[in-house]
Length: 525
Picture 1 (cartoon, rainbow, N blue to C red):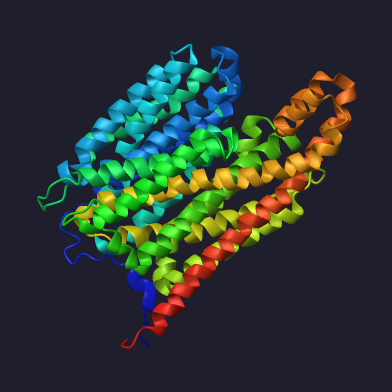
Picture 2 (cartoon, one colour):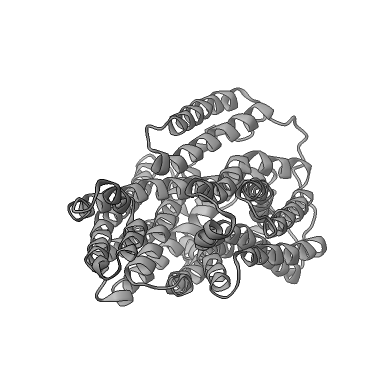
């Protein structure tokens, strides 16, 4: 009996009929290319998540204020997200390998220099430089994979890349926490430097030269508008929770971001050779892939924020213990990401992604209702395992659908679009879910906080970290405040996680609906 592929499996197949033109024939070299690109990717992601655990050490050692700490972390993300699209196009145009090699050299140098600074300002500048270098690395890692692997093996390779991209944040957090617990903060930069150096040497020997073969002018207008659009939006959502949603910098960021995004669409529609042909979003794979990736990364990074605070502030874990506690999610995520594109080819792209998003929603719902300070880690473990499985099923088919939507000569732009969606999603998720959690915490702790002086009450309402530090200053009399703060945080987690679960269900419904709509509109098999 002949096995018929599902109708929507075509969304995972490359659109380019000459898609194997640059594929590497040697299977051993392809494996080395995949390993090398994954090492580069981990370096970029570890550099993003690693400094989160070093904030207290940075504040004590170099005198960084809370605002400066945020820019040390967010400056990297802002530069990375804003420059992904134009640098991805540059890699397509002038060669992916030279861009990757240059990026790895600059990245290693910026991280190495960061270890020797003793004031906040140069560290912020170096973090922005590292973000620029990361934008030269991240999209190229995926475009090298998509052009080096033949069509028959590409989905599995992309799945491996996607699994590393998803779990890399947890692995970076784990490595950095281990360093902070056993050494000083400058050693946190050793991980990305070593990974970049290893990847650089391997890249020089195993990665082939590849670039687009169509000679066209570079879309400077589209590149500038994409930088302003992504940069403005990411700046606004990063500053909103800290400065306030009506603060001048937040409003300016939104205005620039939205205006530039509208301008980008209008300009690209008139270009003969646009940076990104926005008409491609008529492709179901590109739109559903982008929507699901956006939601997955929004929820995953918001979850990191929520759970790390729960594990450290509520359960009293060390940074290393907290990072270790998140590893089961990565253990579920990585193998499923590798096989998910194969599953999608067998049972259908939409079925696989919808199942993944609903599994993610189920895990978030379990966390919302079961997380409990008294029952400890076991109360969140079932939710963590389900979330890891859901992300693994949804993430790599979505990534494959995006890269398959653009031709081989545009794989740098496809990879950059994929990475941009992830970065904006992560920033949006942290801002939205984090704001919900903070407002709920504030509402839950207000009655207790108001029994103190107005100045102390304001400090308690800032967040669980401030509440616990205030309680520590009170000595034995602060124990009731500790209990109240932990209860307020756990109670605040419930609505935040339920909103996150609702977003996952909405993404699943959208993906299912587009599939039904497509099948209703189909008149020929």
